[in-house]
Image (cartoon, rainbow, N blue to C red):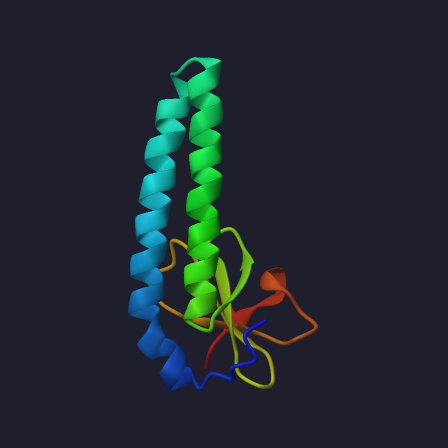
Length: 110
């Protein structure tokens, strides 16, 4: 948890960076996954380790931005009463859920 509270304007301002970094990580992971599918066992293991490293790097990058990582390519922005919620490959930050609800119960931001 970052401890940061986000306004909607602040979260929207941060989104291009979140999307850019996420797109880059997803692209790297997808390329490695394709290589791993057609490779021998030792190369699949190396690809899996590299994928794990990319995902870990992405988590650190998101946390450094003050964003909370809630899953694979899923982030929340704490606004003090719940979370603005975004998941790859959504193009915009358009959802919210309360602290007691999760991703499945999110609603569109009005």
